[in-house]
Amino acid sequence: MTEQAAGFDATAFRQTMGNFATGVVVVTGLHDGVPIGFAAQSFVSLSLQPPLVAFSPGKLSSSWPKIRVGGSFGINILSHEQQTVCDDMARSGADKFANVDWQGTTTGVPMLNDVLAFIECSIEAEHDAGDHTIVVGRVQDYQRIRGESAPLLYFRSAYGSFAQ
Image (tube, rainbow, N blue to C red; front, side):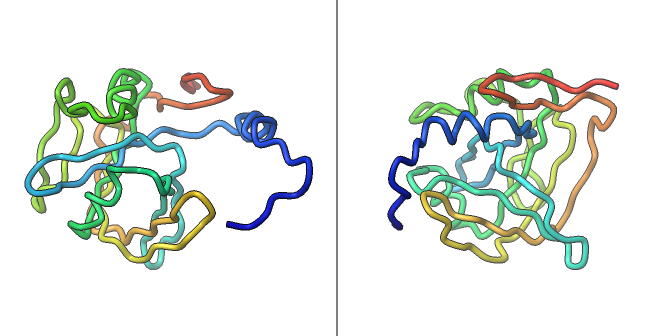
């Protein structure tokens, strides 16, 4: 870990970064036949040729190492109506899927019901990035499910949505 500049205020930096609205996704996978997932707001489309996406789990995540073993993962883009799903997936230690409806894809990766869209990926690369890892996924399949609904957004430590 590199040294931070003298006087660096991590709390103020977090508040500053909170001024950037992000969408909310749930990353899902299987571990020993059991669905695993976690909420993430660090998701981005990287490339069309080849089709690549990325997200950044924290290095202390207990879910990502279990998903990594399977070699593939799903990105579930949440609608504004799915804040409770996000809350369930953000918990540590509990059965995150106890109150969440889902179905397996052809490869078994869990796809949550009623998401805006679902993207299934194989792991292309991982890069060390401070207290997080940048995971690059190669898109294997995708589908728009409820593209007409508003997305779940995260802004200044609160959930919201976008409507035209």
